[in-house]
Amino acid sequence: MSLSKRKLEIYQKYFCTTLSPLYEFDPGYGHTATLFTQRALGQNGEHLIFRLLCPCDLHWKWEYHQGKKRMITLSDAYNCPKKEAFRVWWRAQLLLHHGAKWKSMTLADAVHHIFLRAQRREYMGERNPGMLYVQDCETLLGTTPRRIEVEMLDAQGVLNDVPLLFPSQEILAACQELTKRKLVQLSGMILVPYHESFRFPSTMQHTFAAMIEEVLGWPNGNAGDVFLHDLMKKIALQTGWGKGEDVFGASNMPDLEAGWNMQFKKKWLAALHPSLVDAQVLDKARVLSSISTDQWVCWLKGCAAEIAAV
Ligand SMILES: [Zn+2]
Image 1 (cartoon, rainbow, N blue to C red):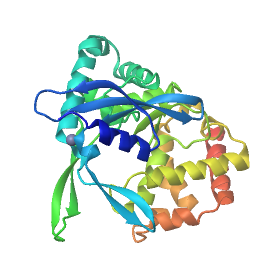
Image 2: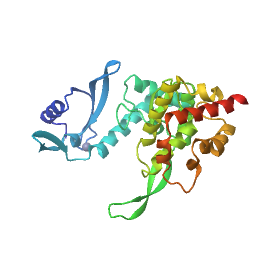
Image 3: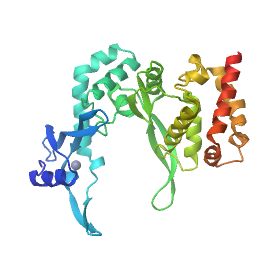
Image 4: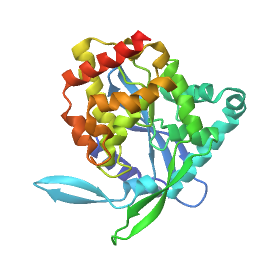
């Protein structure tokens, strides 16, 4: 089934957008996935973004709420298997073009190559077109995601082991190398251009993010990243620190050397707040949130002094 022209017009009008078809994928089972480009206005002017639509996206009903007409979608377009078939096919084409080159590169360089093409608005088979996740690179480059069993309650309130996939250590190390080379940084699990700013070494970031997210149940999106982003911005504003090196030195960025890592876990965390290393204190997010910017700055100056003294 091709996309209905009439419904597509209504869709564009409703979302105030103009879509131009780029590629129509119809493997013959009557459910066409179409890749569109859409012009969007960003910080650097107008640019193209991609949208992947199938008939599920155009399956809706109207509801009226306080005099306003709302589109309620009736199909799970995000998880449509036919769309995934399109993505699998598209990635296979990308592999035909670039696979041999990626194999000849280091993993970090291959990730960077994919990132640069995505930055140039080439569709790299992303799950969310226009947002390149570590997982998208992993799928293209063939590294094996980590499978972790997590206990979760189902709709009936029964606790089940649910397998979840997380990026492999291999691909995360490749991304970290690109951060070290100041080319790419991760926002959550999304690859974005490196932006020089004050930041904690990655072990610290992960430790604080995990504390913030633990009480919310896990996994739970980017609550830890949002907290850290705000915190690092406040610290930078107060101190004028422009990069992590200003506090931790070049050899401890993007991550602390092993000795300092130990120092962070054994001494610095407790110095920041004793409750952070107290196993009896379960809500460490509340403790972290209660620390003032002044206290953070004072603590960081203490860490910097220790490092400088060696
Ligand atoms: Zn569909």
